[in-house]
Length: 514
Image 1 (cartoon, rainbow, N blue to C red):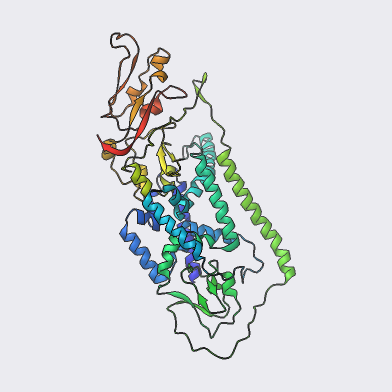
Image 2 (cartoon, rainbow, N blue to C red):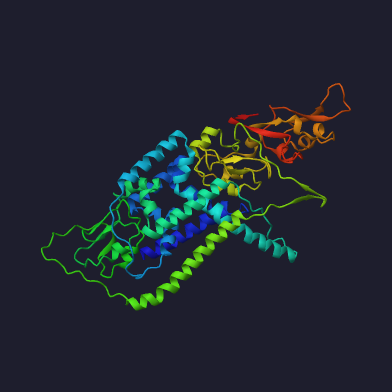
């Protein structure tokens, strides 16, 4: 019953969080956004004391069920582990191994130092929830969007607008490579050793291990019933059950229930630990449950193993091809001329979203989970490629601009890196200022009127003035009032100059009020 309940809850949480990252409508966050906020590391960075206390109490009562029910990366490890073809499904394929302290605790110490030092790239690499988000956004979301676009094409054929097409593009090649590498490493570790990543590398697992040692309810042995068959040890993905000494390493046990299901003698119980009986002098003979014959296994294993391997290889190839093989779309002006894509300007200071307060606040709180990137409806947010801020969101305006009526990123951020902000507050927050580049401006370069930046500036910070003050009949160029500019990027995005825009936004380290 414990294993069934755990599997059902884990399936619901895993599906909900996956859909949260895949959502292209922005509707699901209203119903599923809480799943991101109950993750331990985002709750700690957001100083959400209620969630932190609840998770600690949950661990002190039930053990480390967080890792097998709430954490999406932990659930993904279980899925990968189950894909392994086992010769004997009843007994399993694991063995007991001691805790790898020499690796586990130094990684945790470095992780804590990175948080306080604002080294966001190292934090993002190890944060389990963020790793899962990157995997979904970079590998699964392209497939999801391609499927959506296929349905949109079918619906359009029948004059229905139940679906609409979205652009499928790689937001950051370094982040894509890291996501692909992460899923390969995670798969190999889970395939070979079950919960190796969870109990050796993951800093959240290390934190919870301190509390799970003292949990009220635990899995414990009934030595009178135990036959030393080792079925529990061979089914334990955490490699934390020592059947020879009738002991369980509670710091690594995630209460998955597999050991309870594998025991044929009722020697394992989950609940309050019973008093240990006095040691007996007699030694019981170890018995081994009846297993299928080698011929039966040989007949059943190839078909099952081959089908699983084929499914896995096909899925990975589809994900990689969907993300990497997006052909560049030609944009046509009236069907007569090709319009070049814009090239991102080299900004001295990256632009961070309104609500992030400053680049320092973003670096100290963001874990690079990509939820805000996936939810940005205007294609403005994308992962940073900087060494210290790798995978954290920055803004760029080649595909759209940050509309004053949108605060989606502030609504979905679970860590406090982008704090909740009203639309009124956003319209008065200066995240950067526009800069004019004379040699790229169309009135100067081509001698024709433009004024596109002035017409689309939502704050009225741009005014067209004569290039030559003594010649009012000559070319007019933009003059920028930096005190009124909020850095939304409408001017940069809608500037017709190609490939380098004539006006771009330079970010501010510290956001200001205008």
